[in-house]
Length: 198
Image (spheres, rainbow, N blue to C red):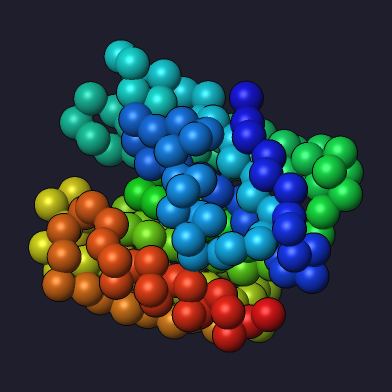
């Protein structure tokens, strides 16, 4: 299940829009259209349903990530991106992920670097060591964390930024005075970062 919004400016990279826990394929489209006007948007729905909460991968009862579920969901998402690119005749997308969607985005980047042209990761974290790392040389990544995020310790976001940089990615790391929810500053920074890479 997904939504596809064709580009009105075909010269711009498509966005792979990945919602957070409890969202769906419609959730982030208004935000994506504000960040990336004119870009094609490809927005899949996460396939995991935990007591009515839609996610891309499962979490255990204590909140820990189910790493087998993450691996399976990452492989599945890579396949979906490949099929959608062929069906819609679009270039490699830039991932725009929030929370659970941002975490599946960086997992996809490490598993299948050729699937993405870059990533905007909003409220992502690193809860385990995913080494060995692929070569992400030159891959542009914007990672935006928040000081007062009640779900993601900011140091876990910093670890992710460092790890992606270690793999060679061109990482821009920002920490906002905000909570887990997205703010106007998230939109502004994301739009400016994306516009600078056209």
